[in-house]
Amino acid sequence: MKNIVIAGNVTRDAVLRDAGSDKVLGFSVAVNDGFGQDRKSIFFDCNIWGKRASTLEPMLAKGQKVTVCGDLSTREHNGKTYLTIRVNDVTLQGSRQNAGDDGGERQEQRQEYGQQAAADDLEDEVPF
Image (cartoon, rainbow, N blue to C red; front, side, top):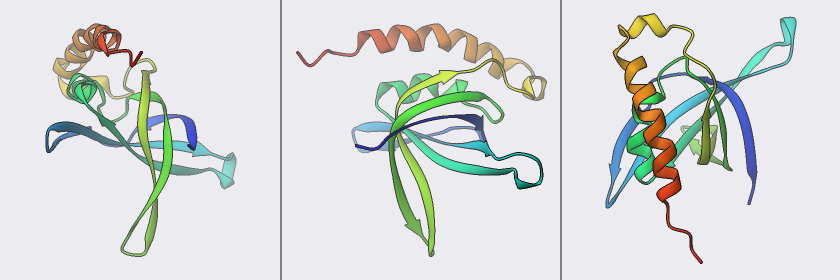
């Protein structure tokens, strides 16, 4: 397994999709690398599977600072290689930089679902 921990900003609102009998939440995280003129961003495509996907969807909006932990892999598309993470854990870091852009409604949803997401994580079955 290739575990990775990254901290950065969500680059677009998360998209919830049906994947057969399960849900998957897709979002992208930009991580700054380097300083000054050598500064660049590295982009990671992230996916969360299961019931946490539905719970976290309203909280992962563009600009939200997050820390993501999961399994690192790559995918190829049209000759380009993309870094992907199958997410095991997401931590919300503060508030969005542009929190006023959504009229406050998404901000309230994130606060409301934040407590629900923590409770849902505790309800996961332990395999032993």
